[in-house]
Length: 586
Image 1 (cartoon, rainbow, N blue to C red):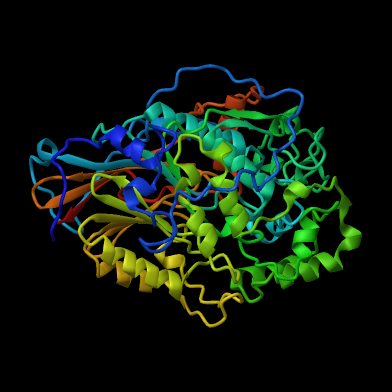
Image 2: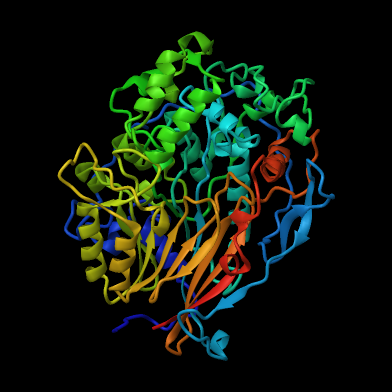
């Protein structure tokens, strides 16, 4: 296959930033991709169209005092150096400390590595993948925390009130890293692969965009003066950090932490990423609770209202869990029935319009808001053409002769599993053909084995949905494809697919709370190497229950996730799924 590239030894950083809009006010992604850089065809509407000037989500109300931030030097460390590990015996609650790093594993499933390749190497792209940050409004009325009683442990987690300081600490670590650990090339950009928010809430969208682009975040809704959620509800199903009485998590060793809830809703300061970043959408960014396409409007009204349900009978929890798992009522009817039948069991909370759900157009408009540009590019991959076509997929430049393709794998018809509609699948095929003389990396939220949802979108009843197996088959037909990078399953997995690698990365809400650096290099011997290196947040591994600063909370976020009921080693994957050199024949 013909390749047209220059023999550079690293990504030309300034050229790349200029092309993506991070250098110079007038530069835009269209300079590299042409007029159609943001949604469908190369001939789509020009990206120069002025985006809306008003944000789609309301700004959160700041409290009187932000969390204190302790200045500290941030080492450019990765999991090659050290990994958060338990430093105590196998007791119910284990404290974390510095553990040994994970070595890099060379994988030759698709090609044999050749000696001397390090000296011949040309770097084509170097970037960071963030996935499944799940910035959570833990006081949101539509949340189904009560399913925890039936073993659905991800419906509520002891650590999730701290998702915002945890995400800021991840941004800090990426900023400190600056260069790829395998090649030394500057990190050119970052990309999210979905589930940036948790409840499809406007407030959460505001938090996500502020964390990524920089600014002050107040992770609180409802009453601006106090927390109103499961952790002071009196229900013993949840960890009550400021209550001396036993509960489910204190029986597992979770501590009593005075002042925790007030600290969890104080404002947090984010420096924002110092490199351009691109956004990919996930099911939690599109659907209520990541699974329900609320077509009745009941859940939208309930979200902004003044009632919240904290506990239900086991029989009702069993029924709802089966409905959500099977996807048998993707429009949310099972939850609507439960809420309507449980009004007497609800408690009063402070209503908040900021908890309203956002649709695709609001999601796009918020990304296109100039106040959210941060390090660029404007729109973070999305353009006015996406607004015109009601699409959430696009292409973007990744460096020397490498193109990224960001997909929308969420089925707007409902359910947490994914798929592609026929229109997007055909667009993907046309895009691959158009870039046959380049290299291509595909990004999505869902991975191949969780794209089995073929429910038809009611807005497009005549359009078929296509599975992950069909996407794999299509990608294998195009030698330009190097990798498919995704998330969703909250665990690390790296799979060979004959001619390309599928790289799935663990979440940043469940332990081990990771992101992944990916570096693409031409070995100039008929092979390419894709280096993957996992990184943790900047928060120290050791924790202090009395340190409720922004940094202290980020450390507690990690340790609480390690000790969460049901947390195990599956998220980390095996050594072959972590720090790797993935060799490809080209």
